[in-house]
Structure formats: C-alpha cells, structure tokens
Amino acid sequence: MSSAGEVPEWQAVLESTEWASLETPAGPATGGSLPSALAGLVNPDPAVRAAALDRALPSHQNTIYEATVPVARYVAAILSHPATSTNEVHSATGQAPHLPMRAELLKWLGSTAYDADDETVAIGQGMWDGTFLAGYPAMRGFRDLRPQLFRAICPLLDDENETVRHAALVAAIPLAEHPELVPHHDLLAHHAHRLLNTSTHRYQRDRALDALQAWGHDTSTLETPDDTAARTRYARLAAQRLQPLEWGGYSDEPPF
Image 1 (cartoon, rainbow, N blue to C red):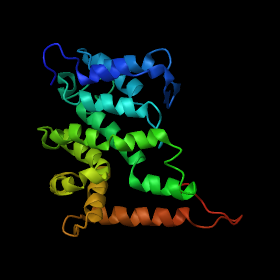
Image 2 (image 1 turned 90 degrees about the vertical axis):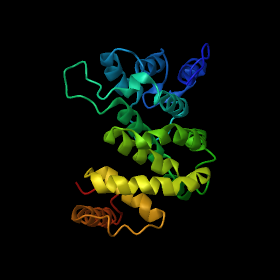
Image 3 (image 1 turned 180 degrees about the horizontal axis):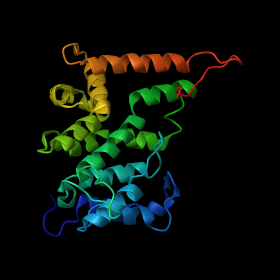
C-alpha cells in the first residue's frame, strides 16, 4: 500500500510509460486507448471494469510484445487494489458475468507467462540457432520481470476465493521457473496438492500435475481416471500431428 501523498505503483506505471511507442497485439499503442483501458480496470464502476477487460488484456496469441512488460507490471500492481477484490465483474451488455476480477487478471498473467516459459524459449532457440532470446528484447524483459510478478501473485495463493486461489497457482507455476524462485517450489507444490484435491478444472489440473512431475513429485495418487484419459488423448493428438503427409511433410496443426 502507498503512504499518504505517494503515487501508487500502478499509477506510476501508467503515467511513466511511453505507451504510444510500444507495439501491442493490435499494433502500436497509439491514441491512448491502451492506457485508458488499463485505467478502467480500477474504475469504481463495475460496468466500466468489465468493459475494460477485453480492451486492456487482449490475447497475445503466443507472442510477447513491447507493451507486454509494462502491462504485466500494471496488472501485478493492481492485484491488491480494492477495485479488483469484487467477487464478480458483470458485463455491461447483460451477458454472463466474468470470472472474479482478480481471477481474470491472474488468468492473463498466467497465459502470458506460459508464452514466455522455458519450453517456449528452448523451441525458439532451436529454431533460430541459439539467437532467439538475443533478438527478442520483449521476451527477455518479461522473463526478467518474473520475480516481481511472483511476489505480487504469492499472497493470492491463500485468497479466500477458491477461483482466485487456483488462478494464482496456475499463474505462479511458469513464473517459478526463474532461478531466484526455485526455493518456492515446495510452497507451490503444497498448493498444487490442494488444487488437485478439490478442482475438476481440466486446464488447472494439467498445469498442477505437470508442475509436480517437473519438480520430481510422484503424482500417481493424485491422478484421477479423467487425468489419465486426458494424458492419453494428448499423446494421441501429438502423435497424429507428426504423421507424414502425402507430400512427405508433417502436419503441424491439431487433427480437428
């Protein structure tokens, strides 16, 4: 929390960033639309917050953009803002309510973190003869930010709202690949066990199981028949993607 007279971190990020010079998924962040949308995430009006979500946090489509780092810093800074503590953010259009605001923010941070995880970098390094990170300053910037993002997310691992707790864990897992965060793997493993004991959410269970296995944990007693079936299905789809085509190449698209 900021002391009296001190500019909150989220506001400092908003005001100090040269947004117009940064590339976003929709092109250059011109016209002030991105900072306006970000400011809307902490607006007192829940309808304004709901409308701001899609504009402020568009899908990255597996790419880290120049604007990603300041947006991630901003999102991490508002996780503790009172406006994000609302249980639900209702759409102004009368559609079904969004996830809890903090869960929406965490979902975006987690998705972005997976777009910059070690596996993604390893694939890129292999494809670009080891020059992937050297020529990708936005990716390097986000990966350097991981400890700061993790610190902002960590308190929400014990949030009273289960949806927020689980979203926090899924977001924290890829961030914890950073060398500084390895000592926190045991803490995350504890929360992964708790998620697996209560959640049936397919994506969340997959992320928790993958993390535990990567950290050397035996997950056999935690897996359900649905988990086993999902793993078999993923393996089958992966094998089908690598089947040779008639012209002698290989499919790189899922067979559906």
